[in-house]
Image (cartoon, rainbow, N blue to C red; front, top):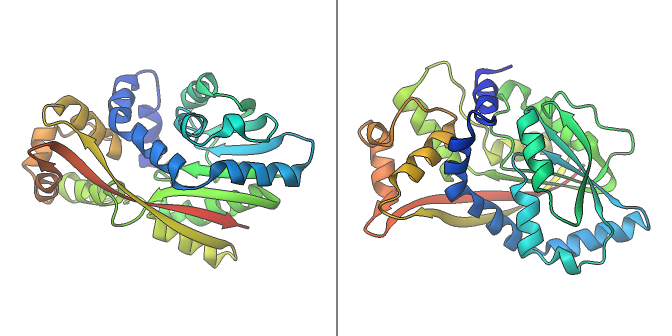
Length: 279
């Protein structure tokens, strides 16, 4: 297990719940923006038409706490969609995350399988899935394992199915902040997150078709929400060594954070690629 994955898994645990909740004070809005970014109801109805009378099969890669299915249920009109219940397989290296996601899963999603593993360690079933998605889920994959992970992602997509990946572009906060944090606090051996550009390039090199829609917005917090911002930033890098004050005093994070704070509070610029993958 890589150091980054080990630290990520430690944060996705009961001991890390406070940090997780601080992170989601800002990050829950990521999933609302994704839910509003495209016509998900049409996507699900088209997939159901291809599937016929059987339930749709969905693989939720690195399912986290189930925020994305909940955002779709609230904002994407799935309650009115002409679909059967969606048989959902939850994949995550953290048993804690799988339990959290299962408990939070809203209709029309229903959990039917659990896979406590990384994506690169997953063996997809022969029939595959109608929908495979990874929403802000692939940051902890080491660069050396990215190709293997994308091979498994593609292999999980059934013939005629659709893959969906939402991930920060290089110009987005999650990638830019992590790289600046490593420059400020190290360690020198630490690898940066893979960007959406790297994921798309890897998929295309393997023969997949990748369509990209950029979703741009700011993650915002009020001027006095210091604790929430500190918890959010620490969780962005799965590292609690530095306080917000220390980050604000250490280059190259200092200039970046100064640019994210104004009289009305904090705004972290997000540039997310919503990628549609055809294997």
